[in-house]
Amino acid sequence: MKKVALGVSSSIGIYKACEVVRGFQKNGVEVQVVMTRNAARLISPLLFSGLSGTTTIVGLFEEPMARTVGHISLAKEIALLCVAPATANVIGKFSGGVADDFLSTLFLASRAPVLIAPAMNEAMYLHPQTQANIARLRALGVEFVEPEKGYLACGDEGWGRLAEPESIVKEGLRLIGRTASLKGKTVLVTAGPTREHLDPVRFLSNPSSGKMGYELAREAVARGAEVILVSGPTSLVPPAGARTEFVRTAAEMQEACLRAFPKADIVVMAAAVSDFRFKDVRTRKAGKAEVGPALAVEKTPDILALLGGKKRPGQFLVGFAAETHDILAHARKKLVAKKADLMVANAVGEGEGFGTDDNAVRIIAASRPVQVTGLLSKLETSRVIFDRIEAALEKKRR
Ligand SMILES: Cc1cc2nc3c(=O)[nH]c(=O)nc-3n(C[C@H](O)[C@H](O)[C@H](O)COP(=O)(O)O)c2cc1C
Image (cartoon, rainbow, N blue to C red; front, side):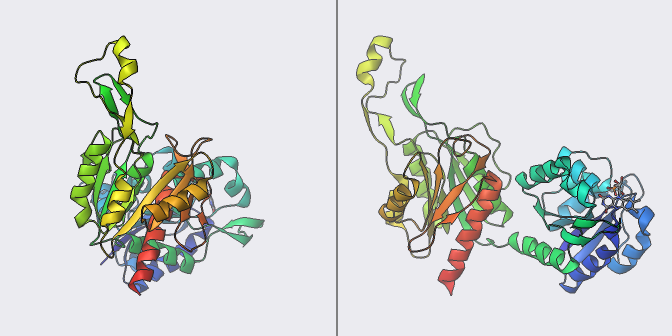
């Protein structure tokens, strides 16, 4: 049985949290309610204990939670952390990494998806600080159920009313379902640049940071897949749960991909493979006078095209195209030439593409309208890409 931690904070919308508990239970999900101290001043924790069938947690330092380090054990058990209603204060604390009570500590300790349903007065909700906190959390992968417009308890009319419990539960169930949507599948992701050395101190490369590929690998792990990440040189921490293989050159990346390819159900080639390498590679540092004549280059292997040619039925291949101009035309050509199922194209420069935290992509498939995303964090972009892959696989299955 899946378990949800339902965070309840001290918003006037707190009465609707009872319906959220019921909604999850009706769908076979166990609920552990975690209230803030202020929430417990508005409604007795006993009400939620009675509804959920489990003692409501309020304090971080109370028995038995303190003795069993309850925030860590609960963090490992849950399939979702849902906060409904979420006060401006809770959103601010999550955004700032403050961990001064059970709920905010649980947020930092958990790797489960997080769903927040804000509820507050319109001025508080639209305050630039609250909006900045929400934007920061979204970029970190937290999902929101938008509040509704209507009559607010303070007598004002406007945005800020807690979304209806059914919408919150529906979204929560979707996020729980997503944690297993790629279960049983093996996903191969490539990331980062490659380096083609001239000699031990000089190489040909590109500014790829590897962030897009690492986020894709992280998202595939979050959806329950077995993940093999083949990474060129980056300064990133490898995603937990993925098997990461480090390579340096295009030839090494090709070798690693060919090894993993037969096992893979989905292949996402997000690496920026250097397309040229030096013909004359020196094992010792070349003197300045030698460098000029040694600069002749040759093409590196086209890994995407190679895999496209070897693809077995049912294997899903996604390529990336980073372009400075004629983005769609170039990406469409690559889609066909490399026998990929999807091409993700992005512009390079102006806050997008290489080295940035955000990306805006166009997703191209044969004879389908182009899907355009706005500027999203690379984590959000990876979710859009996997949603699209899953939808295409589902369509193939039918
Ligand atoms: C009756 C009452 C209703 C409140 N409603 C809200 C609300 O809807 N949203 C909100 O962000 N704060 C609301 N507040 C203010 C919060 O309770 C306050 O910011 C508190 O410090 C938040 O604590 P907590 O986030 O730990 O629960 C309300 C306060 C009171 C007294």
